[in-house]
Length: 204
Image 1 (cartoon, rainbow, N blue to C red):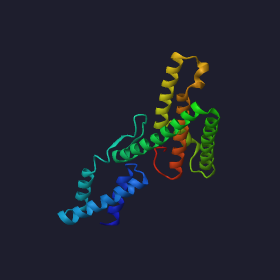
Image 2: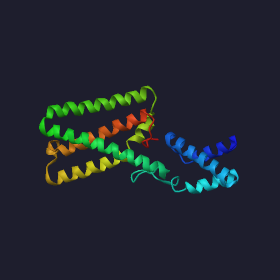
Image 3: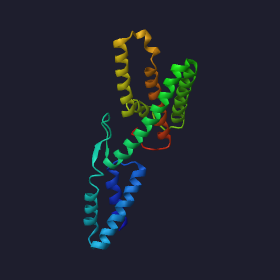
Image 4: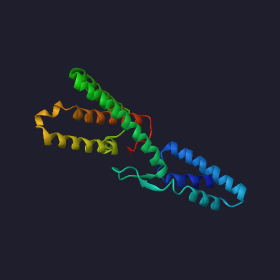
C-alpha cells in the first residue's frame, strides 16, 4: 500500500472518534486485512478498503455511549467503555459499603475516612488544574458524567423513600445516604485518575 492509502485508512478511522488505544488496534487490523485482500484476491486498494469497511461496519457503527449520555461513539468503543464503567461502579460500591459500615459502627472513623476521600478528590483536582490536564469546562462536563447521573438518580430515590417514612432531621442517621455520597466521591476520584492516565472514560 502507498502512503496515501495509509492516510486514507487513518482519516476514515479518525472520523469514528476512537480513543488512541482502540484506534491503534483497529488501524493495525485494517492495514493487515486490506493487505491480505489485495494479495490473496488480487484486487485494488479501493475494493479491499471497501470490503474491510463492510466487515467492520457493525463494530464501527456509531451508537449512544450510555443511557444517560448524548455522545455517540463506535460500538466497539462502547463495549470497552461499559466494561470499564462496570469495574468503576463495583469499586465504588465496595468502598461505599465499607463507608456505610463505618458510619454504623463508629461515626468518628467514618468522618475521618469520608474526609480523607474528599481531600484525595481535591488533590486530584489541583493536579489536573495546575498541570493543565483538564480545563474547568471539562470538569463541568464531568459533573454530568453518566455514572454520576445514575448515582444522583439513586440518591434522589433514597432521599424520597427516607422522607416518606422519616422526618428530614433524621436523614443523617441513615447509612444509605452516606453510602451514596461516598459512591459519588469515589467515582469522581476514579474519573480523574483515568483522565490523568489518558484512559478514555467519556470525559471529553
